[in-house]
Image (cartoon, rainbow, N blue to C red):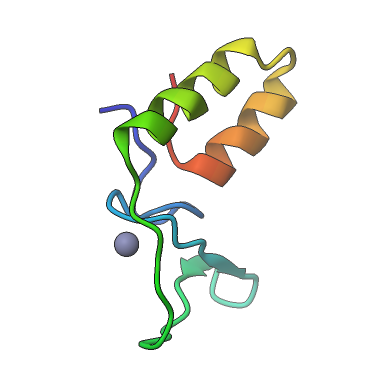
Amino acid sequence: MNITGHNSYSGCRFCEIQGIYSQKHKHVYFPTNFKAKYTKKNHTNWLLHINELEVASTSKDKEILVKKYGNYK
Ligand SMILES: [Zn+2]
């Protein structure tokens, strides 16, 4: 499926929640907010993200996009 693991910044394969890295524990955590509404990932955005990755010119740019979107190609 070309998605990043559960310890990545975009570790949820269902929604767009963003993790926060704890330097102390060397682990990515996801803030618990039961009132927040998380945007579900959808097929159209998935394809847009893959397209952005494909046209990224440098590996640094790709790395940033992988962290942001949680998928790679
Ligand atoms: Zn989620």
